[in-house]
Length: 366
Image 1 (cartoon, rainbow, N blue to C red):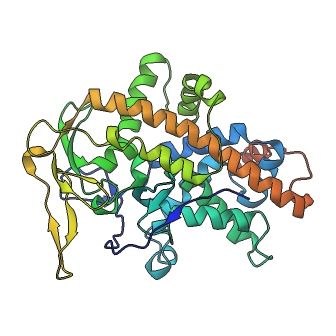
Image 2: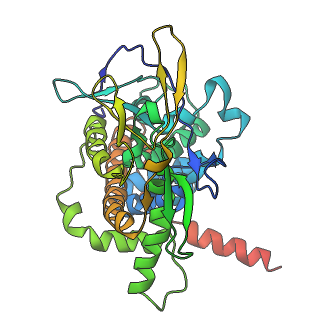
């Protein structure tokens, strides 16, 4: 069984929903954003597909009927679908609200239920066939899509984030776009999710491969595997999600930039969390009411090439690790499932998608 060791802590901390934010041209114009963006999630799925065992590939294909890259982005495409919103929303399963480590080095969460932690634990049981047969193939396909997506999410440092600033969604920054050479108002979470990866990784790729006309998840996966080959040979692929969360949280000091002016922090919250001056947050008062603490305008940092390139090295490592950890997770799931239902994995894996697609194109030709 997958090892998930999270220390639960009862707390009166105000429950906050993390609103994920898309790259905004104006600071006040926020739209929904998806962790890593499509490119990052597709790349995690692509790397995982290269490292899964043959029986695992057959098991995954049995339910998905699509490659892992396509499956990886599905959970971000349904956030506005009424089936996935409201009281039974899946949106909170994309992240965890991190509070720090306890005396035993275990991760403390603001709340454990309805988080990525719970999803991965439950999915392992369902997909391994330990659910007592109560879930059908469609439900298992849905679980697989979320697993592929959420394992990638948890490698992003700000998805193991703080509730008080909504995983840095409430942290205002200015981003110098490498193509347009101008400042764009956005937020720190958005920078880590999409902007750095989709801009600076492309710059690196095309500088090294000037003859290429296209850069997508296959090319990014090739680049990451070449760059991280030595690291991935010794990577910790433990299925202990507590380890993943601790590792992502260690990057918080580098994920939050220092500021050149203004007060760096308003104060320290309970647990010693630093509150950055460019992050707005809600603070509970003694009378039970809350008030919004606004970001200090002069403290808003401008993030350019130096910050982006340092962050990109972390992002690339975490994406590669995400792919390897996803492969290990799925291998463990398939091993358990195949013991209960050998027919799911008994036939050697044969990837028939290419021939199927060719037959489809031939038909469309008329």
